View 1 (spheres, rainbow, N blue to C red):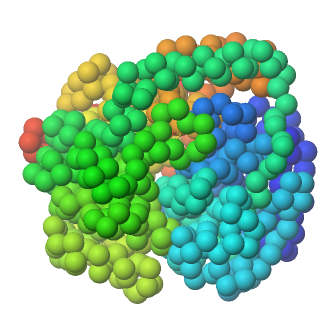
View 2 (view 1 turned 180 degrees about the vertical axis):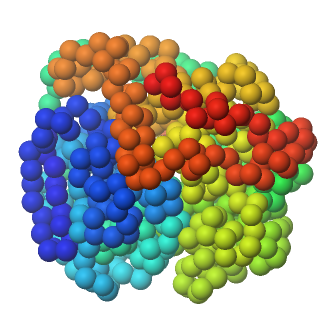
Length: 570
Ligand code: SF4
């Protein structure tokens, strides 16, 4: 495999063989290692010394179900530490098939200069953006696919990334004109914008496949893995994940009193009934929309949807739980049509719906618009795309919005807005938000699925649970696997070891694999330490430790000593 390096300062691209220190790493693990080796930890995240890395997971391009996710990473302008965000679509598969272990962007183009990186088989070149700058991600993807072919993959930023806003994410296209895959979190779209890179276009690799060290071992393990998912009652064709998507948990999160409501002031939303996954499916299908669609070819779970308006015209594909929580209940909105419209605007501007929903909640609390008033919220969000002063403020995320508007009820940890579970009533997630080197991120170790195993309202067992989940998340993000496909691997780690050994011939044991997963967190914590993050950064905001959350009237009371010792046994 090889690395594609791009220096935006000199408009130069070159290929390098993969050095031995990067050989056994993929996705999130590779990002952590490259940051440690090549990026000064105290550098300015939007400056020329930061690097932006696009890396498929270790199983990218192999055809393993759900394993084609693309990891994007760099030093985050929000957390000021390591950041990895990943997306579906066709990029991870394409890079894997091309034998590209990572694309590493460094330097910074001169102010006002915008470029496209075009990858075609073994060649890569930097081209002028040619009028794509200034466009949202939908139009950017359309323009570039017209130019380079409808089967190409486009990785792009919208206006938010061009303005280098901290809430900016990166959009990745999928098959059949699909647009809504986002490596959303941590402000990586702003890092891409800071480089002067509007988009990457990858021509579809034709007739290429990855070499397999032991094809029988690999294929047997990959088939078993897919079959176990198909047989899983939650993930198979009759399962809630397939039928209702991630929104299937809206009712359960609301019932447990953890659904962010009106800037995290309640865990129970009175309008949750019309935000539920079951309702979403009913409305979608009755209008001629789609349910059970895929973000990448070959996924046997198919958890996505195409949400349409009353005339059957697509608004957004897909409408997901975190977006429903942050742009819905958190803003006092119980109408899916309204949430979908805000979702589309965020997607087009290239904004993280979680960070933006958290920032909007803070802004509404400051009186800049009203909870439950769609019109005032839509106008506020429109200002982000227009680049007004207020819009840029909100686009920079929850912490900046709170600081400027004088609100200290800011739902953020390690500089990043919180996802759709209030940590006071799901304390395992609170431990993850506070301690993960990735900041407040539900994909870094989500305790929702373990709520029957560890009491979500108690403090006992939370730090052990969080550590276990954080190690699993590091594995998923490094192999390119979708979070929802984890049950068979958790039940049988040997399955993953067999797929890796079949692909690479490493002869790994389950102990090697466990060590590799833990190493991801070790590297990330080391980078963050060197970047200056201390235990004072790894905390839940004070208001959540003091203000009881209805309906259970609980505070976040996991002791600091527990937070500080989560990684003691790593
Ligand atoms: S389960 Fe959903 S998010 Fe995961 S790969 Fe499949 S379609 Fe994409």
